[in-house]
Length: 562
Image (cartoon, rainbow, N blue to C red; front, side, top):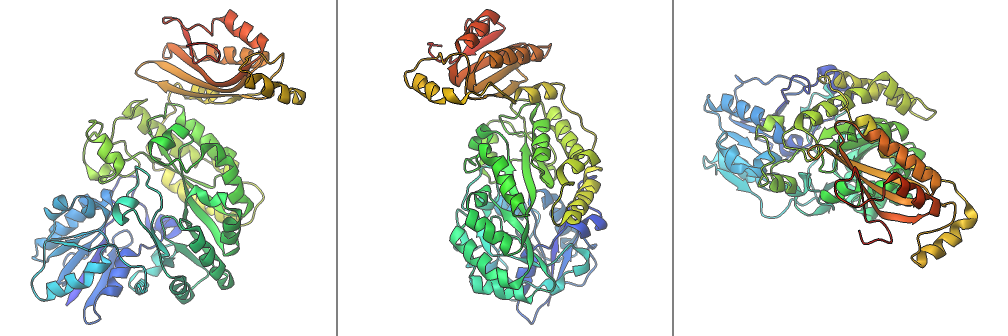
């Protein structure tokens, strides 16, 4: 009996990778190699990763298994059709089939829902006995104990950056609205026995490996034990973790000492409002720069995931995000367009709102707009994303992010060159006309800092008085969002305002008015204090008017009823 397990390629004009790129950045997946390890030894099993080798549709085979994410579904269905035309039954599993099993069943003979480890051996036995069921769903979640070592020998090792891939945990302790992980693995975070992980790592050839966990530091106690046990092995490794890792100095130090050289970090957005909307408040935007510095201080290369198209993103988000990456020397920015994947909370929210443009799953790839954004058009989002991808891997941006004294300098440069080859295939994009203006508005206005007024200012605020004398001890921060439909710029101010700050604020606001921005709404709720001169200046300029119809509309002015 012969079984062929297939990992479909993603066929796309510019997102498909050449063999050279795959060899530079691609690492092997473990789903099919694990199922192969669970297959009874009397059955011949082979694996085809279509990303590195073509599928032989004329092969003498008894059963075919395919897997794939949402964007792979159309190709998986095509593959299934070719084999079924020859009378060969096809089994499909993975996140997409688990999210939409009835749809998948229209294209294949058998659908596996959820993790396949607990049902695979039974499925194979049913096939041998001629009694395959249409659906297989495991009771509960797969135990992480005594998992077989993946059959890495079935892969074309020379075609990948590495096949040294190990899983230590499954799931994620967080529940971000856009993420498929919680939907597929459940609201659980399961850890594999450290002894078993260490034994598998010892079996690997070479000194580099990838831990393919969704969040390797999701359980701090487990991660600390794992990192401590890894140290004597002197391996270099990469993985994925949440930003919370950077808030535990001991854990971060252990990660670096155990050989961590690169981490994918889901930054997602620089906006606290966006992070709140997608249930990712454990990411603290005000600590991002500190977190990036902590990783670099431990010589860990950052691969940062950043999403465009969230509900508080305006036309300025593309340049703001890129400049953040350059300022913080993020080695490999990975930009994505927000994508509501079936089964996620984001999909369940957007579908009844009528915001999905279509359900062509091949376009649900993280690089194509498939929904209606809140604060910009679909075209603006697509073009801005394209611009960011190409600009991030221009030589100018690479120089800003990578060319600085550090270890493993050439590794960082070579990684950027590989990503640059991908970015160059991205269609041309452009910065929206308002981008420069919005980039300038989302900034900090430095004020005159007078230390001897700190105590005095605190006393005045405690008494709920606005006047603090001639100078403020703070800075004034501006956070702006543009609503394209209303042609209105909303500006939230935070900090303190002195005379110089008021003058600069007035100057900036006058600079943004053009044909597209017809009104500016200022929110003073988070302004802690004004100087008397600032109030006088803003009043003379008409910025503290609250009547409708005024060009400047100020709301939540401290000490007023507005």
